[in-house]
Length: 265
Image 1 (cartoon, rainbow, N blue to C red):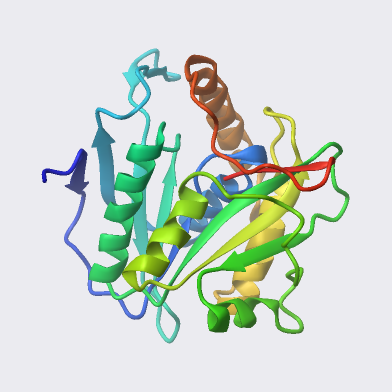
Image 2: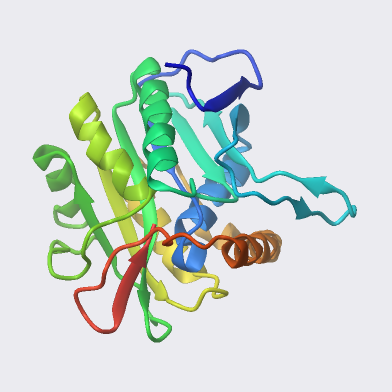
C-alpha cells in the first residue's frame, strides 16, 4: 500500500554511529519542541528529511515575509566522535487524526530501524494549573531495562508516573507503542509546565535537556537558551494557536489522574 507521507531527502544520507532518535513536536508548553529545537541550533544539525501529507491541517501560515508556508515536519541529524549520533524530529504540528498519527509513526520507526537507532526518546509536557518553580521530569518506556537506565540514582527523573497521567495520546505515546511492536526501544520524558495554551515552558524544556545531557553527556550549555530561541518559539506558538483554532478534532494528550495535572504530547 502506498504511504500517505511524501518524504523528501534533503542531503546525502549519512552513516550514523548508534544514533539516538529524539522527538520534539508541539504540545503543552511546547517543552519538547523547545528542547529539540535547542539541540538542532546548539549542534548546528543538518536537515535530513522533510515530510508532507494530504493529512496536514487544511491551512497554511503567513510568514514574516508576507508569504505562505505549509506546516513542517522535519528530521535533522548530527554526528559526534565517541558519543551516539543524533536524529532529531521537530515540526510545527502533530498529525491531525488517529490514522495519520499511526502512519506517521510507522514511517519514523522505519527510519529509526534503517539507521539502527539504539533508542527513541519522545518528549512532552505535563500541564499544571500554575507555573512550576522547579519542574519535575517523569518518564515511561516500552522496555524495562531502558526504563531502569532513566530512573536510576542521579538521573534527575521521578520514578513513578503511574497515577500522574492517563493514556498518552499523539506521537509521543504512539511511537513508544508501535516501537514495542516493531522491536525498537523507547522512553518518553515528560516535564511539568503551566497548562495555558500560550505559555512557553522554557524551564520544563531545560529540565528535559538536563536529563538528556545526564544520560548522553553531549556537553550542552543550557545557559545558551537565548532570547533568540524564545522569540522563535513565540512565533511557533502563534502558528500552533492558529492551527488549533482551525482543528476541531480531539487534541493530542492524556487524561489527568490528578486535578492539577494534564498532559499533551
